[in-house]
Image 1: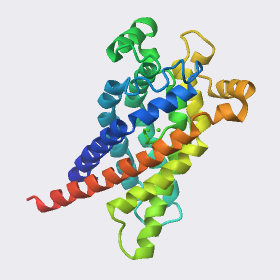
Image 2: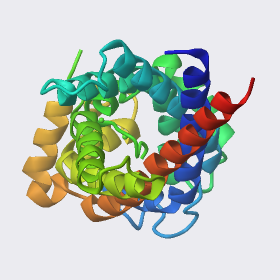
Image 3: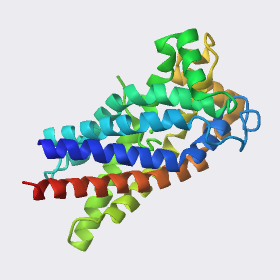
Image 4: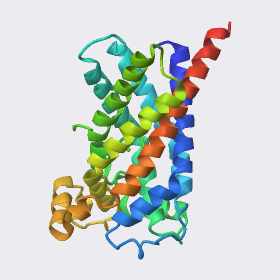
Length: 286
């Protein structure tokens, strides 16, 4: 990958990440409170739905930039643009690698953000300080495994020695939908068409990975030293299933689908548009 491509992926990814996180923050807050073990009302209800936004804003640019730099590099390294039945697998590998790298930045930001969302009266920096004081650096990486297991851009609004279900579904589906649409109209998709493909791919991936998102939320919000805080995803899922059944495993599925569908439209559309513009500027400059 040449220097213009590297810079375009970095800047476009960062811009897309900040845009989607700030626009969709209220929906993410509602989803987090629906999944909170203390219940929606006690977690804050509709009060202070922008609580935790500083953490999200600070983490958005670098984590989205890290994801797309890695994603584009791995696609380039694996020659994913060539026509092959292995292309979806290459997209899966590229997206998975991108998530592993991005989550090194995303997880601390999300831990602080989610605790702020269910403690709207407490300042974000105070929450960050309390985590470091009481739990150390490992407290900021609470839920790292379950985040990588389910993260993706929703990111965001998103799908780790693990498979990464969200990314394994979202990005190959996004790339395949774009390729199909390009083939049907006999030219490369426009940015708005890429955004529509991103919305469909994100919504579908969001629905099927909601149980893992519930587990990650429970682990992140658990009290230090509790069995849930240990981060055993299967144990948490089993506990939710026993106490709340299927409804508990899919708590917040509709706001999650809404947020990630809209997020996919904004995030992937903004990325595609910004990336194309930057590459065009790079070609025109001497």
